[in-house]
Image (cartoon, rainbow, N blue to C red):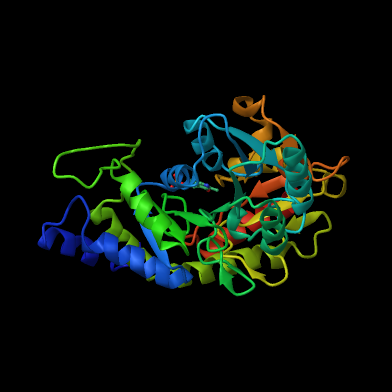
Length: 367
Ligand SMILES: *Cc1c(COP(=O)(O)O)cnc(C)c1O
C-alpha cells in the first residue's frame, strides 16, 4: 500500500457509502481516465469481468469467433467461452513477445475467405510491454474488426507517447493483488466512446431498464466495483508512477548484472515504447548456458527464491485443444520458444537491493 488508501476508505465509512457505488468509484474512474488520457472509464469487480463486458458490448454471441494473443494468462480468453464464442489464438513475435502482425494478417485473410471474420481481436500487452500497435491496428482496420486491448499488466506503459490500453475500441486494466497497483481485486474498462462505457455500466448492474418496477430485456451481470475497494484504488493511483520507477530499477539491475553473460536475454523493450516492467523476465539460450529454465527455477527454489516459467501459451492448454492457432511463420512458433526458454524473476517493489543481489548471485553461480 502507498499510504493514503485508508483515508479514502475512511471517507466511504464516514459518509456511509459502503455500497453500491459512491464518491470513490466516481473519483477512481475519473482519476484513472485522466491518468491514461481516456475519454471515459468504468470500474469493475475484476479485469476478467471487464473483458467479459467488452466482448458483450461488441456483440459477441454464441457461435462467433474472437481472436486472442496466445501468450497470456488464461483470463484473457476465458470470457470468450462465457459467451459461447470460439477463440482463435495468434502467435507472438520476438521484438515484443506480443501478437505477431504477420500471424494476425494471415489469420484475418483466411477468416475473410471463409466468411468467419472475428467479432473482436484481444491484443495483450505482456509483462508491461506494448504490442506493435501501429501494425496490428492497421491490419484490424483493413478488415474492420474492433480491438480490445488487454492492458491488465501494462498500466502506465506507453507506446509512442500514448498510454497502453487506450488504443483499442475498448481497453481493460486489472487491479488484482499481483498487478502493479491493486485494489485487492478489481478492474477498469476504458474507451474513447462514452456511450460504450455508459452501456457497460448498465450491463454491469444487471441491465435494468428505465422503469419504476424491475424490468430487464437483455442479460446483465453484477460486475461493478464497490465504493470501499475503489478507495484503495484512488490511493494506489497516487503511487503508480513511483511503482513504475521502482519496477524499472529492478529490471535494470538484473539487466546490468547479466549483461556480460552470453546466453541470457532480458525481455526487449520495443523502440518508441516505455514498459512499466511489471515483471522482470528473461530467456535462456540453453546451448550457451548449459542449464534449462526448469533447472534454474529449481535451484532458485532451493535458495528460497520463487521464479516461474513464462505463461504457457493458450493454444497449448488442454482447455483449448480444439481451437485454431496461427504461428508467426511456417517454421517458427515464437510463443512456444518463449515458453520453453523464459523465466519470470522476482520483481516485487518491496524486495531490497540485498535480496535482489542474492537472486542475481544464485543465477550467476548456477550459470
Ligand atoms: C490479471 C490479468 C487478467 C485478469 O484480471 P483479474 O483482475 O485478475 O480478473 C487479464 N489478463 C491478463 C493479461 C492478466 O495478467
